[in-house]
Image: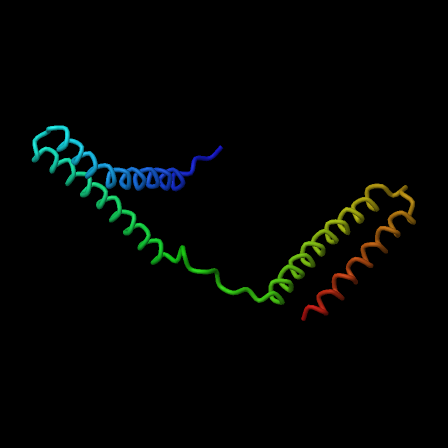
Amino acid sequence: MSFDFEEQRAQIRKVRYTAGSVVTLLGPALGAALLQGGADKWVALIVAILGIVGGSATNAMAATKVGKQINDGQFSPPPPVDPVQMVTDVMNQIANEAAAKVNNLNAVTQVAATVLPGLAIGGVGAIANGVSAVEAAINEARDHLK
C-alpha cells in the first residue's frame, strides 16, 4: 500500500478550511455571548476579533491555493481529442502488439521445428499458415489506417 502525501495534505487543508469557517461563525457569536454573560467587554471584543481574523486567514489560504491551482491549469478543460486520431492510434497500437505476438509465435514455431524434428510437419505448417494469415490481416489493417 502506497502513501499519498498530496492526498493527505489535501485532507488537512479541507479540515483547516472547514475549521476556519466555523471559527469565523462562532467567534463573534461567542464574543456576544460572553458580553451578555457579564464578561468584560474587551474580552468579548478580543474573542470576536480573533474569530473573524482567524477565519479570514483560512479564507485567504484557500484563495491562495485555488489561485495556484488555476495557474497550474488544474481547472482547465483537457485539450480536445480528435476521435478519428484516437481510434487510429489505438488501432496502430493493436496492430503493433499483434505483430509482436506473431513474431513471438514464429520464433516458437521455428524452435519447435528445430528441437522436435519428429513433430508432424502438418502441425507446424498449419501454425505457419495461421501466422501468415494473421500477418496479412495486420498488414491490411495498417494499409487502411494510412
